[in-house]
Length: 180
Image 1: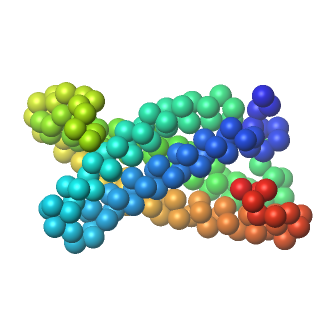
Image 2: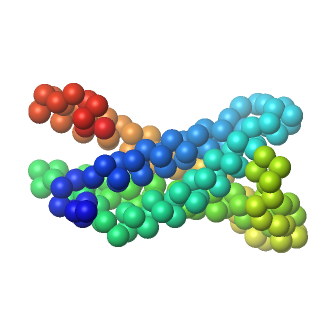
């Protein structure tokens, strides 16, 4: 298989991207709704199982996704793209790849360091570590801070992706489905 540096992103890279993106945005969306949606405790509890299930999936799949990206590298930059845009794009990609691992990891740590087992739909995946207040507080801060900050980074990524998609379709007269 050719490295991503040579010819853009291959089919496996695109599948990796979209599987991680859907899982990550699902978990992030649920987290934001639970935190800021004004829901009562019972409603939040019902969503928490799905949030945790998606988070565990994103973490497990993210290990593969990030490892694959490290092995394959990033697609080559277009020389016509200004240097400042290339640097921002690389920073955004690295931030998103880091978030794929750090968001669920901080949620997992928040659970097990807060005297709770990590359970998904009643199945225990990790035992409680007992009460480790400093780790629980750090993981809680990280989970909340990353959740809000990565939302802005994700929005920037989506806007830039749509801009580039529009430019390619306009330039090459290709159907959008072939570009995605």
